[in-house]
Amino acid sequence: MNITIAGGTGFLGRELEKHLSNKGHQITILTRRPSDSNHIRWEGIISGTWPDQISQTDVLINLCGRSVDCRYTDLNKKEIIASRVEPTLAFHKAIQDEKIKPKIWLNASSATIYTHAESLLMDEQNGVIGDDFSMIVCKEWERSFFTHFYSDTRQVALRTSIVLGSTGGAFSKLKPVTRLGLGGKQGHGNQMVSWIHIDDFCRSIDHIIQDGHISGPINLTSPNPVDNDQFMKAVRSTLKIPFGIPQPKWLLEFGAALIGTETELLLKSRNVFPRRLLESGFSFSYGTLKECINGLR
Image (tube, rainbow, N blue to C red; front, side, top):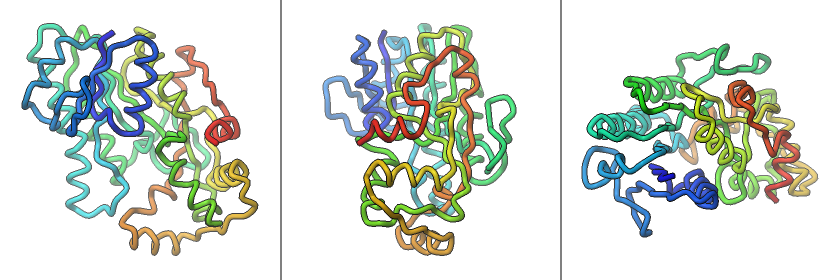
């Protein structure tokens, strides 16, 4: 198939391109900084030549969105939302203008759409969606995506949890911190961590494409979330670091202010379950955190 990936030069996009290319698909990357023969310049708006690519695309995957690893100032909040909503609306315009439309459009979303929960598992049907900033971002993102539907195009919102891989993402940031002895629990350590191995992330997207029936929101996460304390113990064990100094909430808030980020990224409890993915027959290669992190050494 001809597959177009927008925002395909980041960690997820690079790994997804590799996975789908190995399956024999032809991949085109939409990016602000084209550097390869299969790259097309794209600014997240209707301009340039990229809209011509839509009529040649069987599968459209939109991974665009500015990082939330920043302080939530008013300006940053506006830019975070705009970086997700505007490209999504640009794709709607491009699709509407073409007679031949993609067979499936997968649009990034996030498992942070669900409220903080330490005991209640959040699946697609029963998950509770609230109104803090991260949830508002996701709701606006999905609202822009589902604002139009197309009879010939399946639309799937990818509610992705923390993706763990050896070439990028959260694990690559945790390794140096843990090796310095700072890999203890964050806050009280009871907050749940929903995670997925990068291979299962890529395989799940391939599964959704091939399934032919999945549409709407779907959780991309392991079926076995763990609390933060267990998560950090697993990281320390894999790296053979015997201890990790705990980071209380006040210290995290002080450090977050110094480096320009928010403690929510560490302290929010994401307790998410991939019910629709499992019901569709998907089987995880890395079902437990131990299997996952052992595979990332």
